[in-house]
Amino acid sequence: MEQLKQRILTEGRVKSGNVLKVDSFLNHQMDIHLFDEMGKAFKERYKEDEITKIVTIEASGIGIACIVARHFNVPVVFAKKSESRNLDGDLYTSPIYSFTHQKEYMVRVSKKFLSAEDKVLVIDDFLANGKALIGLLDIIKQSGATLVGAGIAIEKGFQGGGDALREQGIRIESLAIIDEMGEDFIKFRD
Ligand code: G4P
Ligand code: NA
Ligand code: NA
Image (cartoon, rainbow, N blue to C red; front, top):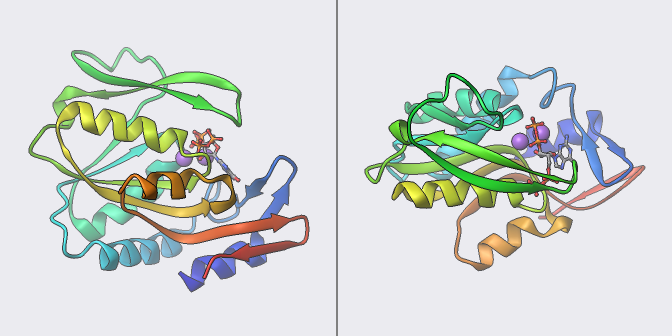
């Protein structure tokens, strides 16, 4: 998606540890018009699929998922990372290892909100090593729902998570795939 790539080039900052900072439009301040264009782009790519639910993970996936969901006209369910008193009843859970934070955490979704009748599109802001996405796919599998695919804003292709999942036959549509980046350059996949 050209518009997203341009924003990454003009506003993105490459930090140490292969981290791309995009908090002027994606991860802190959020550009809702850009999110809306992303929604259009995902809808175009998944227009043949009868999505019934969008699944994402807190925190920074939620804003994008909600605006994307307007284009599919379906609810959003976000996996929770923290134990919460508001999470009652039976849960699907999956452990996720975060390289960025070097620790494992559990994600949880109530069984009330995901079932075998659902056809799910996963939405997230970043795909790096793919651990967060694998955790969400595990939860979707536990629920018996059909996974249609994933829609990712920015994939860091050089970290390999996306391609490994594609090799397993999972459909992943990323709006910008970065194959290489350094302090003063960002190279996108064609
Ligand atoms: P993985 O899920 O792909 O394996 O990646 P990893 O565990 O390393 O990512 C941890 C967190 O960092 C995730 O957010 C992910 O979205 C985010 N992330 C990964 N690479 C980048 C990057 O280059 N730039 C930015 N801005 N974020 C990146 P999170 O910690 O789960 O939390 P939240 O921010 O959504 O609350
Ligand atoms: Na994040
Ligand atoms: Na995220």
